[in-house]
Image 1 (tube, rainbow, N blue to C red):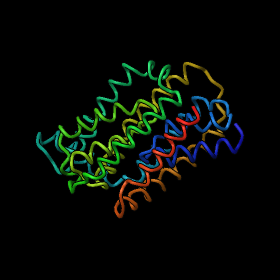
Image 2 (cartoon, helix red, strand yellow; image 1 turned 45 degrees about the horizontal axis):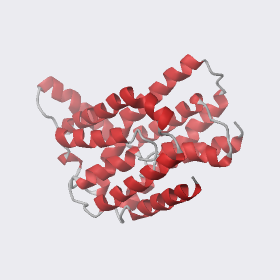
Image 3 (cartoon, rainbow, N blue to C red; image 1 turned 90 degrees about the vertical axis):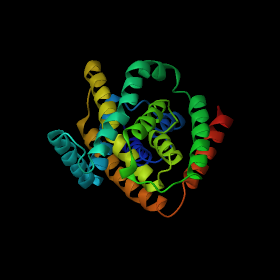
Image 4 (cartoon, one colour; image 1 turned 60 degrees about the vertical axis):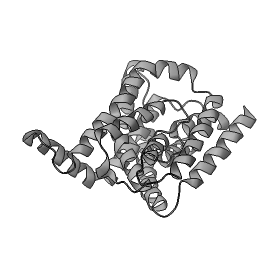
Length: 263
């Protein structure tokens, strides 16, 4: 890949992974419109590593507290501090893991078209619009196992390109009465095991393919996607603490209509 492609794809991954606009859709559409060849599994893995580093570093204090309370709850056999949030992240990941194992090949072979992306972009953009009008005041401490299962089921639908993992999990949380910031923060915490699973799957595929790896490209992609993803998380949380999800709803409508008109 040339430097322009590396920079562009790294920034696309970093800035869209945590926004409710679908990173997978953009990584499919950008090379298609620009006439670039597929970036390959190795680079996909690198971009996942970059965004994982960003979310782990941003929430390092939260993750430490959750893990500490989670392990303490095992020892005491009772709820401790934020241990329920740890269980919620685990339980919320199960549906997407099962769906990925069951439907990954079908989705890869049949649902990566611009037409599907256009439809899901519009449908779930509309869902985000209506959920945002229902915004509540619940925080992360109000997330129960039942809530985590419901949000986890919504997250499984995001395997379909164009849906947006962060978008549909935030939509589900908003419908359940959580605040915008709480919805986003839980969505980001929930992304950690999902990114690890997706990156692990791609790594296995990479090992099986025995593809040639250009390490300089990978490290550059990791660094740039990590920096851009960190900036995205920081500014997105600042933005939604002051305003609604409407800018992202409008963007989804514009993108969906554009794709329908083109394809």
